[in-house]
Image (cartoon, rainbow, N blue to C red; front, side, top):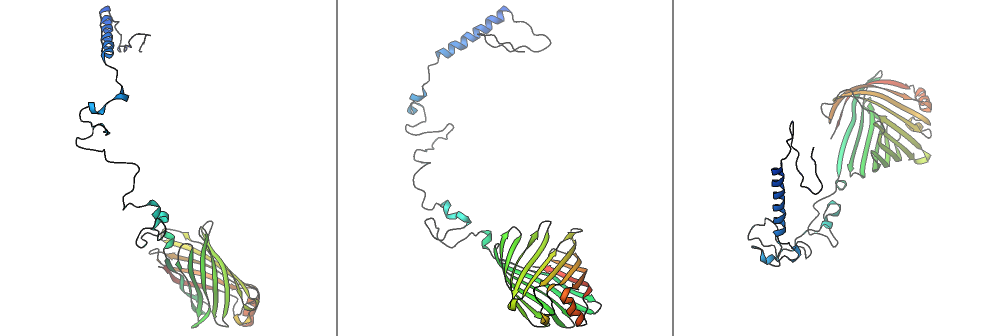
Length: 328
């Protein structure tokens, strides 16, 4: 415990089992040291920094500012750290506004553009989601489902193609050419044309839809179509991926189609026309290549089922499928 008396010099307390008291001689010695220290302070002349003459100190030149510890021979007198004109080859930071060199304006730099933003690049991809062989009670067939796109982050050209082949003939096919525009995170609007071909008369449609990933990672593809003679159609597809392991993926898929009016040339009736529900299990040797096996149920409903019965065809069938999914 330290005891500090008013007007006295602080004395550090002695530590240990017992502190010995200071005798009269020790008190006199401490007082003598304090008087000597005070006398030395009084003898020092008062320092006036405001009137300091740099020329009076060795190594310093008048009119120049030097820092403590400066090396001899260094002269900063002609260096102006602030103000003045920039060097002729200096870069203006505004010339890089937006991440690239401006081509015109007061801050333009000579030469072609060197840097670009990410949404200024064109990208493309092609996904063969289903390329498969199917087996039914009536025979074998094949199916394909392909989607490709090319463009930028917000605007791109989209191509979709889907069809079924059996008995050596293209039974039905749907091909769409669309312009896609991003409206939200994971969601695009699509506008363009759809063309139906295969058995029966060909049909053309104006197409408008949305495609993206819904909450809980459901992939949704919905579109509405308008054709000639007042024809309308609606298609809704959804699928989901269940990761059983890092390479084994189970994919359920559902698709339904509606038509606004009967079209006997295409064997479709008004209302809910047909639906498909399938389950595929694929093994991804890599993210770009995965063979799969699966099963799906195809059914016709309403007036479309009535037209199938009248033609002696089945209104529903089960398909066992095997195929490959790949993209690049």
